[in-house]
Structures are given as structure tokens and as C-alpha cells.
Image 1 (tube, one colour):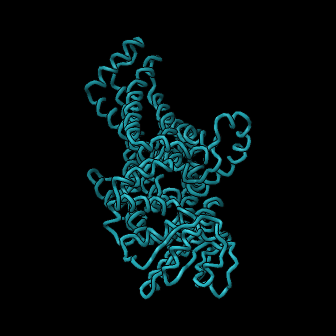
Image 2 (image 1 turned 180 degrees about the vertical axis):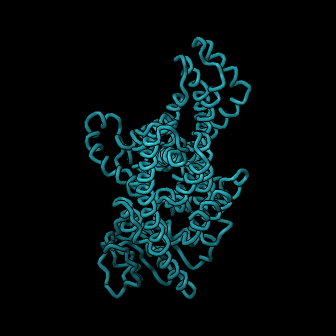
Image 3 (image 1 turned 135 degrees about the vertical axis):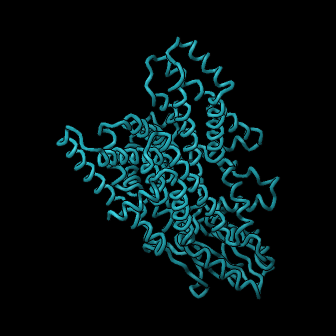
Length: 554
């Protein structure tokens, strides 16, 4: 054990060895995140985003801002485009963007811990936890916007802390007007200028990635209290650069207003959030009932160990206590509007909250590591108690973290159907129509049979897992003998427009989920069936060539 400790200190903690653990973490990150990247089938939102990127590839002028029509800003979709050219597997190409965004998150996490005066061990542990904790690991392997959004928020936090740090060496005990004027002069041209510009760009990029970036702005303003000030004017002075950065970020977001579809950005909000009037009228009571479920998101994906560290950090006296309190408040401030106004709330919406909680837990680890490293002093009994406390806390929480990580990794690599999802995520990713189970098998079946015949394929739905997941795999492939079109759901009839065109093809197929399929077809016409786990509905492929003209029409 002593030899291992000596090697660790020599290789990672000696002066000038930062590059060693950056290389180690980089290799660990990409090795663990790219391995079995496609084990979990495509998810509905992934299919939509990748399909939008492919439409941009085909007609950039027409589709570059198409995502605005569905209430999504376009940056993540744009980033998907070049990778669709680089890789032959379209889902892999999409998920590799999330992997790269996750690596940016790992680096930024280390930078923020360093900025918060964490030790090198804390910095390294923080980066490792972002690599492996289920909340981070899962979302850094899915072609979803939330990982990139959180990375931009982390960058904005880094600049926000840097701005507050700037004021530790600046006089802020003047009158309110003098402080504000002096701050404005510094913003005009100084180091503060670049910090404000960087913060503005990070906020703007967050908005261009996903609209919930707006929830991070109040969380950032809490950080004016990071450093104490002798006078209240000092806090007001710190508001000025943050206000300028926020205004700059909103101006970057407002550039989207140049596009005619900008107004559509806010058209989908009522699908996910209660209006404030409904909240005040009593919807908040329903929202409060869901809070225990939201807590389980963090217990399951960040582990009970990390949450215990978070609680300890709030009460154990230390140099980091103020910082831990602010991180916890930042997470709660981001979380509160979603928890109170959310109609449909999935765990991924809270990923930015996971940022603040992870940072707070890491700084708590730093406190207990300091207890263990402290040299004996006169109050030896007290110090011995602190060391015992640190040993128990670190041992218990470390064990809980390890169990959570190992359980999740083993399922992700070898049996994605057994991934320990919370109930709402199990429905999304494994058991409902949004799960892509059977999609790749269906695509292979279509491609194989279309080599000798022309096939028209009707699918359940208009977008999402069907038909987008099928279309994304057929993009840039030979499809002269394939025509695929969504016909809506549930499937009770076949549109006459589809029927007329389908008559010119050799065979006509129908792809639908068993629980949304209400056409009365003979069982022998079922070509294939791919069932989801937990006795969930199956994806079915039907040959309706003979029955086409007898089936109900709209």
C-alpha cells in the first residue's frame, strides 16, 4: 500500500506532473465512453436531432433553423452535421458529439474546482466523478442537448467566479455611485473586459443550445456573495459586470430573432410547463407532490454517497463552507422553477443541478482529506476525532459512490436493458414508443429485401422514433427502391394518399408499435416483431400488400 501511495504521489501530485493525470483522465474518459457506445438503442429525441442535422446536410438554406419550429435553438443540431460526414453509423456520429461535450465538461469541472481553491486531489477526483457518475456518464453518451448545455453553464460559472475573484484585489468600499462608475471603467478595458466577454459568450452559447439556460442566470448572480465585502456597495459593484455579461448573452440569443421562425421557439413551453397563473391557482400542490421523485433522481444518478457529502459540507466548519453553501443554493435556484412549474419533468432536465451538487461534494471531500493530512498539533484529541470522522465519512461515501458507478457501468456495457434507470427514464429509454428497440433490425430487414423488390413502408407517427429513427439510418444510402412515410398514431387506418402511391411498389409494409396498432390484420402477415424488455410493447413489421385496398382510410 505504501508503494502504491508513493507511486501515486510521485506520478500525480509532484510539481510539474499535472500533464500526467490529464493524459490519464483523457484516456480513461474516451476509453470508457466510446466502448459499447451503441449498446442502448436510439432514443426518440436523438432520432429527431440527428434527422434535423441530415436535413441541413441536404438543404442547408431551408433547414438550418428548422429546429426553431419545435422550440429548440440550433447550436447542438449544427454540431451534429460535420460528424454525420465523418462516420458511417449515424447514431454513433451523433453520440460522439455528446462524448466530446462531456470531455469539455470534465476539463471545465477541473478548472472550476481549481478556481474555487480546491486542492489538486479534489480537482482530479472531481474530473473522475464527472467521468463515471451515472448522471454524467449516461448523458455524455447520448445525442441530447443537456450535456452541452451544462458545459456552457459550467463555463459561465467559471467566468462568473473569475469576475468575483477580480474584486478581491479591487477597492469596492467607495460610495455606491463611485463603485459602479469605477467598475464600468474597468469593464471598458482591463482584464475584467475579457472575463465579461467570456461570460457573455458562454451564456449566449447556452441559450443557443437550449432555452432552459435562462434558469442558470439567477444561479450565477448568487456568486456576488462569494467574497465578503466591508460595505454593501461592494456587492452592488459586483453586479455590474454580471449584468453586462448577461445583457451580452441575451444579445447573442436575440440574433435568432433575425429568423422568421423565432416566434416558434416559445410555442412548446405549455407542453412541459404550467403557466404561472395555473401555478398560483393550485398547480403548485401537484408539483410539490413530485419533489420526492425528483430527489430519487439525484440519489440514483449521483449516488447516496454524493448527497451525504453535500449535507456534510453544509455543516462541517471549513474554508470551503461558504462556497459549498453557494453551490447548493445555485443548484436549488436552478431546480426550483422546474420543480414548481414542470408538467413533465425528466431527470435530464436537472443535469445542470448535478453540476452544482457535484462541485459541492468534491469540496467536502477536500475538507475531509485536509483533516487526514493535518500534522499533529497541541489539540491532538480533537484532531484524532476529526481524522476518525474523515475516515468514516470518506470510507462510507466512497463505498456508496463505487457501488453506484460499478452497477451502472456494467449494465451500460453488457446489458443496457438492465440499466438502473429511475421509473420515468425506464419508460423513456426502454419500454415505450420512444425507445428504439428493433429499429436497427427493421432497417436491416428493409435494406435486405429492397435489393430484389421495391418496398413502400408506412410507419406509425410523423416524427420521433418513427419514422425519424428509420430515416436517419437510411440517409445517404441507396434508397431508390424504398419509400418510407409516417402516417400518424394510433394506427387505425391508412391515408388514401399513401395507398395511391404505394400501389406502384412491389410490397407495402407497416411498421408500428403493438399497443398503437389497431388494424385487424392476419397474424401470418407479421413479418417480424422486436419486443422491448419488462413485457413492454413490441415493434412490429407487417406486410399489408394484399390487404392494402381493404384497410380503412381516413
